Amino acid sequence: MNALDETHNPALRSWVASANDPASEFPIQNLPFGRFRRAGTDEPWRIGVAIGDQVLDLRQASEHGAMPALPQPLAQGDLNAFMAQGSAARIALRRALSQALREGSAAQSALQPCLVPQAQAEMTLPCRVGDYTDFYTGIHHATAVGKLFRPEQPLLPNYKYVPIGYHGRSSSLRVSGHAFARPLGQFKTDAAEPQFGPCRRLDYELELGAFIGAGNEFGAPIPMARAEDHLFGMVLLNDWSARDVQAWEYQPLGPFLAKNFATTLSPWVVTMEALAPFRCAFVRPDGDPPPLHYLDSADNREQGSLDITLEVWLQTAAMRDRGEPALRLMQSNFRDAYWTLAQLVAHHSSNGCNLQAGDLLGSGTQSGPLEGQGGSLLELTQGGKQAITLPNGETRTFLHDGDTVILRGHCERAGRRRIGFGDCAASVQAAREPVVNPVAPSRS
Image (cartoon, rainbow, N blue to C red; front, side):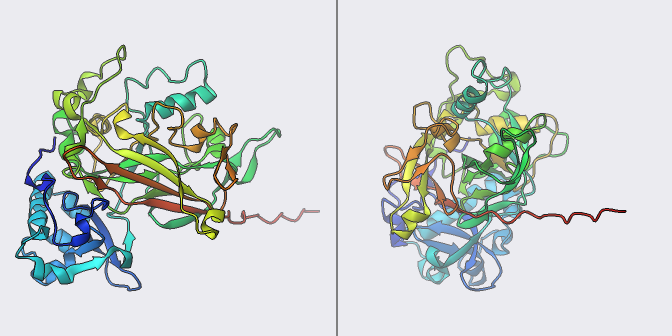
């Protein structure tokens, strides 16, 4: 597990004044990584560190000699290669960055020209994602959805024994701020045959994503005792879902076109070290089976969970046209997940699967135990039966064209500095016209 050190001191202040604002998501205690370039340029993508409302350009810092000990992969814009170096390299750099960015640092004059306002930065995915696996750790989501389709058995017998997951599509991962067309697909209505056309029940899914740092050799499982060492950091993740398409296609092999059309990530990777002050005990409810031996450890029981507050906000096209801000639909917490990140890593590699730097693990939808804490519209509207009425009179059962969904997350604890993830936002556009094949002429 990640230990606390002087970089977590809540009294630390930065010479970047905006980082000292209590409302900032990126104080000096956070220092997340992202990949960016100056907006409106075609300069090479480079790695940056968010500090207040600024980005520290690590390429420029290296070229100017402002950070002589900077690892070369970061100077070259390659976060994957740095991820692969493991936790020791990441911890050492965190300390160096903390010292360079804090008040009174001798590095201020050299680093000041290397700052870029976040408002002037164009972001992209923080690293190359070779593989994307989506898990199903949100037991409250799994139970709520199960009740809609299997009221007699909401949870299947395997749920409390095995971390359920499926392999997603990495090519359609996009960074916050993008827009995508409403997906097309097959879905079933009351008609005898399925239809093909624009999805009618488009939904979001409130998730977290965890990036793998150092990988493992092919055939060599990662034990629980070392699973955390293979994690680099976390982002917010929206795994959009075409519910009507999914209902028709998912048996017998699981999600396919209903999930692979778009997945949105927040741009800043919050490292496991930054999250260390917000760990909490992993406790199963009374009466539930304990994890199997390969998914259990004393450290995981003592501090395997993370206290991360998660929120979903919605801004409709009408709200945007009137200048109205987004509306918060719900709030939940990652500490309610049924499986920890260490368990996901240990299980994923337990059969010898080799994880690699930049691989992404999705948490699954993070709903809370209370009414109104559903991490998807499917839950909040009881499968589309109970529409949500917005303050302006609009209603929603599922998403409309023009809707923008924003995921937000933060960690907050007494005696610690609040840190955040930045927005994970994307907008729905109208569906593209289906491709219609010409009818072949009949032969006489």
